[in-house]
Image 1 (cartoon, rainbow, N blue to C red):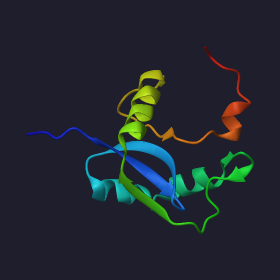
Image 2: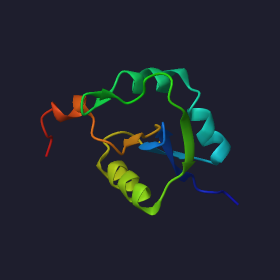
Image 3: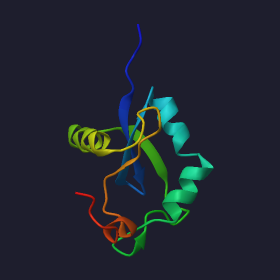
Image 4: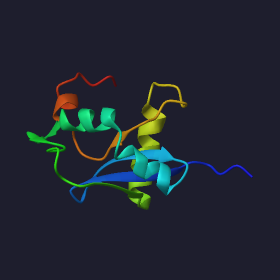
Length: 103
């Protein structure tokens, strides 16, 4: 029996920030320790504030129904192959606001 990946949310300092797929809670928690992710979120801002200050606790947990819906919507809109890890941000990113709307 093959289990489908579940949707998890990364909380940064207690704030739900991004949703992603993982096979289980252990795999989702490993993402919190990935150097590339830490570098990416440290370089992004939301409303002028960094997503991560390098000190706040990163915690993965199972997503709420609302967070799952937002993730699925982002997955539908994504123009990338499904085998790539999709990070669906649950906060508005300053960098993305400046890009022209592709719609």
